[in-house]
Image (cartoon, rainbow, N blue to C red; front, side, top):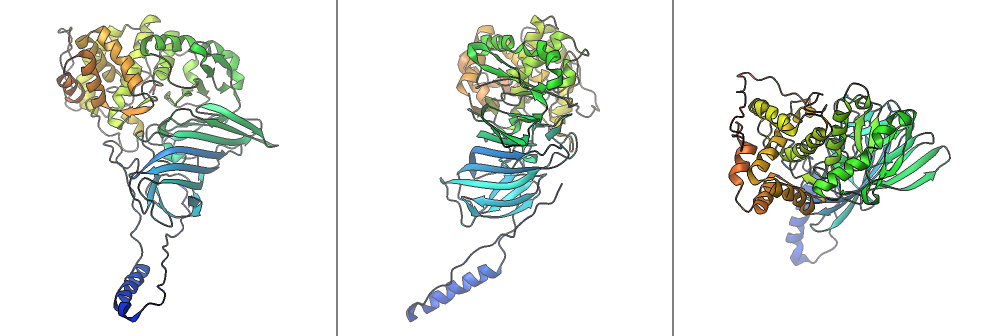
Length: 517
């Protein structure tokens, strides 16, 4: 990681003017205190976090980000750092003498707070900002950071993905701050503007709607803006030799895809499936929640797909001969379902990940069943058989163990995918199909553009069902062993091995995608 150019944090003190003799003792005391304060260095900056059970150092206390404005300059080589300017508009929820941002893997050149130079230092993966004066609770502040954004580094670290013709992003779960300074936790959603400058022969696309395209001579600047708040882990920027075919979705929702220009014709049969997939999901959970949608097919071997907001990321190899059509269709629906479950309704803590992945797996399975794949009941019976082993390997669905050190993707275990869908199956068996379908629609309607957790889902389910479901959710979400399946007393879960293998991300196959996101 390149070193950060840090400027010493300093404080200013005013020297008292002439005073009357009766006040001399008090003034001398104050002057001595000021002298001591001037001599002693300020307390050392420290890394902070909001205490997420799985990622305790992510996020920062004391403020809420309202909006990000991220400027990136790409010079044509994805092995070189990008020049960047990130502007954060924040609202102070506490009085802060210092403000921490999550940021690593870039060099900071300067920081300003409300237009005035600020001191800064890096501690672990935090950028600690020292404004000239404390920031008062309830006030607004604009923080401007000039920095680089480095696409080099370990392949599986997250952040930038180097593609065959440029770059794309994969920030889940904790890698947004490897690209830009941020409050990198899904609990703090904000509006985003992206300003991307790249050589003329390349195309840049980002989350949201394109607002402007400016020809600068040998470069072009592309501006995109979201109309709905977004978590940092869902940010997406694609730069490459791309085609951007467009079409219309249900009710006129604009769909724009981003694909390697050389592969556009070959990929078109897959791209034209999206409107029907959107109609299918809308018939089950309600209106699509965002301003646009599309698939980004990257020339990269990622080993996963990802639900970046309004522009889902797929690796090129998924759309080849290795997988049956019904399976690829279902994975496309998995990422599309995330636009409701995970993007619009975002987890308050990473322990609530099962709400994202369980729901996306649920609708993936239903779509696969209709397309000729395995039936939902078969998949859930197999999931039930393996469930105790999954819980032994990675913890219960809503209390997963932290990811393996150095392998953050290991958080995405089967227990939150098929294990999460299994919770939904048991819930439908308990409250009935009609109540379950009303719950699904109410969930994405009542928490749209917000954050919510497992307790919120349990409360809403109890309200819709008209009875207390706390005992149900306590056992299905938090116990070490899988409860009996309602309506299927014959189902059995295989006892876990005494020495269970290390948790692994889901493998490609008909049961789960290659980390479908």
